[in-house]
Amino acid sequence: MNKLMLALAVSLAFAPTLHAQTRAPNGMPAYGQEKSIPAPKIAKQTLANGLTVWVVPRQGLPRVDFVLALRGAGFAADAPAQGGFAAMLAGMLNEGTAKRDSRAIAEAAQGMGGEVAASPAADGIILSANAVASQAGGMLELMAEIARQPSFPENEVALAKANALQALRVAETQPGFRAERAIKKAVYLDHPYSRTDPTAESINAVSAALLRTEHAKRFRPDRALLVITGRITEAEALKLAQAAFGDWKASGAALPDTPAVATNVKPARILLKRDGSVQSTLRVGSPGIAASAADQIPLRLTSTIIGGGFSSRINTNLREEKGYTYGASAGARMSRAGGMMVGGADVRNEVTGAALAEYFKEYKRLGSELVTTAEMDMNKRYVAGGYLLNNQLQRSVANTLAANWLVGLPPEFLGDYVPLMRKVTPQQVRTVAQKYFAPENQSIVIVGDPSKLDAQLAPYGEFTVQDK
Image (cartoon, rainbow, N blue to C red; front, side):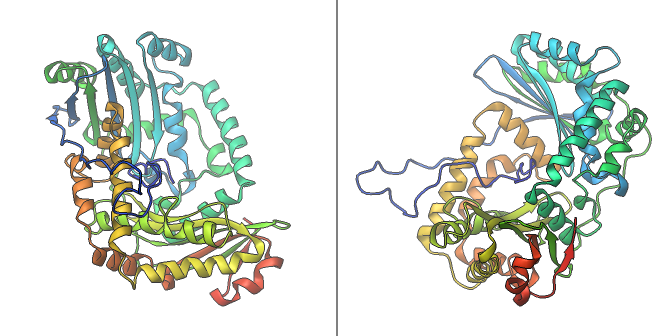
């Protein structure tokens, strides 16, 4: 799973696996009453500079959490030759500001009982911070300083580039990295969502000047959301937000919105050479939908059924029944401007073709047969239980609200998701499976030894063999 998806990406690997019964097994306590996340009372205000502020007061530990989401600052804003740049930008934010170096930032955060961190996603960058309640004002000022005044010191940039190049060299040896990069390119083509991975050239092109230029373009109050939650009153939170961000001004025109993902992509067949490999890494993928699309709720449940948990159909088939792999998955990845369907596993060389056949058999079955009541109930409990567990902590609530906002979902979705998911019918599951898991629409990427795979792959069409 990607990081956003976490995001909402949501998604599919939260809770312990449940068994496929509508009632608890004999001798075991009955399943507990299912609950929904109470729709939080969110105080909303937009500052004069366009910054959106949401406040969610919560009783509990004397702690306050802050999340600042910058829409349009993520990977989708990276130029074609700057793939993966958003990760470097996010990682460099707390390495120095106009007032402090990286050590001073860390010491200041620790002194307030918290921390500050940033992470990139396809549709934006998220900064997270927390502190004991008595230090909320100081922590928000520190967070604003990091977001608004990063200095990108030359020595820290050089170190970050060296580390990124080393990490890339390691990643390039991993078949999973190569397969993921290739399936994104096959499905997204030249869309910005295909450029989330760096190259040596894009890393080497990073400079302090480029970081400052891109920061000025991407970090702007009219494209930002600040979520404040915890032991704090609405009035105090809004006062702190105004003090820390009220005089923040945008620089220049906003970047254009990310274009919609193409959905009429011709399926590709790609074999990435890995001579001498004793196993194959496979990915199957096709265009999906945006996170706010009409089908998104039934598609999330359908993804769980087909490949989103240990008891999913794909994993049960390939791991438990066939013994082809230690684990197999499939499901939807959804972003603001579109998404993709992705399935994948690592399998023994001699069962590569058979594994593909089982993937497509399960895809076809889900689109032709109605899911039983018992299987529907199991997967609804799995999704609901995991979602509720994942959003118990106030920082999780703040992160979910911000992540949802980045991909175009309203704040009410936090409380609406589970009730809407419970209403999904077997007919809806079959319909979305027909739309988005149709075998004939799937691109195939295999990383492995061509000499051991050519005959097995022949039934799936002509594969383009690539070194990288």
